[in-house]
Amino acid sequence: DTGVSQDPRHKITKRGQNVTFRCDPISEHNRLYWYRQTLGQGPEFLTYFQNEAQLEKSRLLSDRFSAERPKGSFSTLEIQRTEQGDSAMYLCASSLAQINTEAFFGQGTRLTVV
Amino acid sequence: KQEVTQIPAALSVPEGENLVLNCSFTDSAIYNLQWFRQDPGKGLTSLLLIQSSQREQTSGRLNASLDKSSGRSTLYIAASQPGDSATYLCAAQGGSEKLVFGKGTKLTVNP
Image (spheres, rainbow over the protein chains, first blue to last red):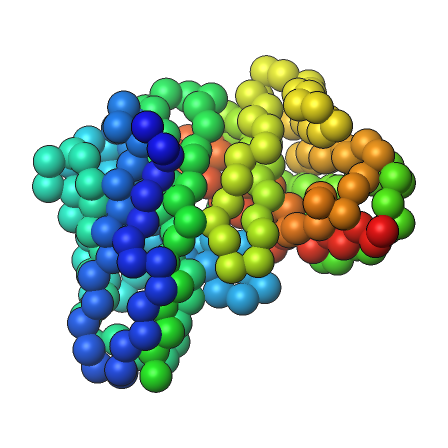
């Protein structure tokens, strides 16, 4: 297993378009997290799944954002009607559902909304 | 609500120097604290995880300590090298399961 994989690595889209990102976690990991990072800031929590169940969503997460993990394996994050403020690095992480377990991150998807 | 602060925001040192990065958190009820490295435009690489019951963890030239009662963790880097130049992030994990990050310390090691 090569770690957490994210696709695409970069995405440029016009304002108002919908975009979808994919994350493939480490195969045995049942927890999957999405974070957003803007320049000069630490990653900000968006949502997380345990298996296929979405257990928490940030109150900061707009209704335009939706995430799924249909079979408890890969996950998708969709942003509808993108805005310039959505421009950021979107990071995915996975871990085992245990206390004191490391989270491993992917390389991220850089979104630019023009 | 957990808040994580990292000081300094940026640090520049000559090669070979030993250095300490600081991380503080407001809620001491954490399960663990994790240190990450981030290169420009890249994702995060896990460096060390310290469990709440531990005082420190070591990996090569890196040593991380944790003092839950005072809400502090430090990352010690020995004999720094230019390849250590990156942003270092700490993250606290508590009962809500999510990691709460600081803004990071940008380290530059000059040859």
